[in-house]
Image 1: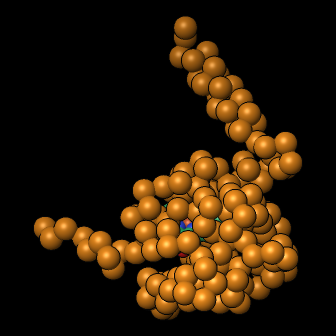
Image 2 (image 1 turned 135 degrees about the vertical axis):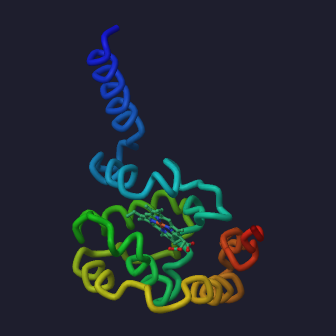
Length: 164
Ligand code: HEC
């Protein structure tokens, strides 16, 4: 096969993989946006090397138990600075929280709206120690809201970098 044909075949396979992975209830664009903007770090199904990047699958809905947790997600630097529009980002966050979260969101939690995400992403968490901030929030969620201890898996403080 010539190189052009190979590239075309690879693109077709990639496109088929993207559409094939979309659950029927989910607009394909949202799943595609997740894969392109977030999946490289978080994994296709929200499962990553959780010591380096937090796992989203089955956990991410717990944050909606508190106002601080709800505000945290759109304020994360990689989320706030993504190239997705407010609308697209709200849809991706709702996909994570309500689908990928697999029932971890509290009953009656409201979906994110574009205006809310637009407001919060203008205040990205860049001035604070993200790990300390996250650590305190996670302990509250586990101790007071029965969130899974799996949230503790990601914490760079617990896994100091190897000395050179
Ligand atoms: C370059 C890698 C990278 C990309 C791209 C990325 N993230 Fe993250 N994400 C991280 C890391 C690392 C953290 C841990 C907090 C931090 O250091 O920002 C994180 C934290 C999170 C969390 C909080 C999880 C927790 O338990 O604290 C959510 C939710 C999240 N990201 C969603 C997204 C979404 C949505 C996108 C796409 C718009 C995205 N991420 C893109 C690396 C990434």
